[in-house]
Length: 588
Image (cartoon, rainbow, N blue to C red; front, side):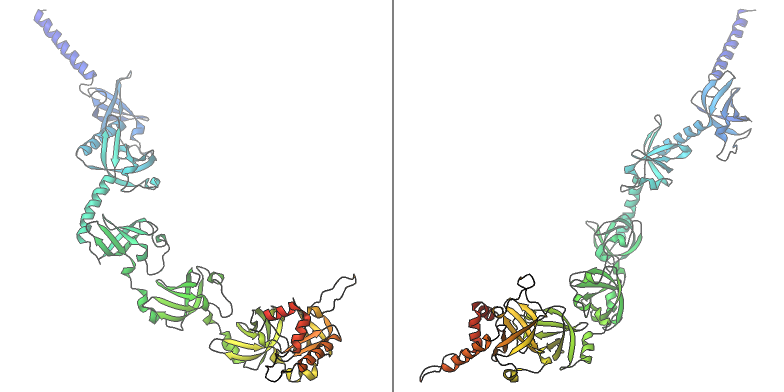
């Protein structure tokens, strides 16, 4: 064998060795970490055998070719892309992966989309620290920061899970497997485009459509398309609105009217009620005086209650129009917010947007019933409702009181304080003296139940006469006693005789006690009777007073001295205390 032949054979062997080495090292079917295309040779029970060329075959677990319902998605002869994980093992098979090949292809697509500034689609899968996790092509996970979710911070990110959106890749690192997405960038761009379009057509008076974007105590912000407008609470409804949340929630679509628009500041004021007819324009026709209406109490003040008759139209029931018979101190004692009721229209002023309502007008007027039933001179009975310094108020009918002036309480007792003779709750009778229809007042008299005793008083009750009486009232300066119906008198304190009980203790007098007393003085000028329990002394006092009155006569040319009445002498005897009380309590 020649040297050239040997060299030629040796060169052939070297070339084959190089070819084999290249084949083994992946020269024909790829290297570790690369994606190559192969052909499915066989689908086994647990694995799929794939020919990747270069007389090499690889194996992939069947699970990578099985769908969620268990169906095998590959068959012999299919051409698929696979990822070379490692060289041939002891069995001569290369370890391959379809999943990794798919993911690497996705990463390449994402990388290309990022370089071309394209959008990618993804589904928000779960909440993670600082934001959300988004699943994009091939199951690749990307991170969506909370600040990039929307134009404004969203409190509840969990509600976005499962939603599919378009995203922009703002950060990409294939080596570290890091992808950061943004949805806000897209929304800002969309908003700017909408804003430009909206501003081109926006003008005052125009009716526009929008979506409630945010709600505050004073109003709601409406997204008109790239620009927000304020719908103030006062422009939401013709009726009363306590809080915007009563009418709207975020996301609601509304049709509003542009009230004001400032192109420089881009501030827009909106109105909802302005898109509707003002209900006050037909209030006079809808609610004429005298009409019975139904409404709902919306608010209560010190002076009355506001009742909504229809959305935007409220009327006031003044506290004086709530009851004929009750003195309503505060409307809340009779009504409450939210209560539905019937009432009557009293007056309408559409220009001032005021309606006066009445509640008591739905019931018969007690005054009308009273005037139809009674006339001056009629006798009535009732209970003492209240007592003042000047008289006693008696309830005649429900809702109608009459007053007995203190001068009409007794013919013979000088009453300075009506409470000396009567008490609240007493049952009394009286005569109607007059009826004032304009002021709805009734004047009563108790003494008028009996004839005036004074024309015959000196014959019936002369000083010195002993009479049986009954105590009707106790006062600081004595006791009032009733001699007979319509005739009362006073026994001063120092003309009372002490009485004692079984233990020899002083027993005070009580209302209803029977007392035998002597007529001490009959004062026709002041129309009062004074009595004394000191039988026999009253006559002597009266006689002395009369004698002094007759003996004192004026001399010629002198003024007549002031007459000293029997009553005055009695007062002197009773002492300064009684005189002082009498003077302080003089006639009003």
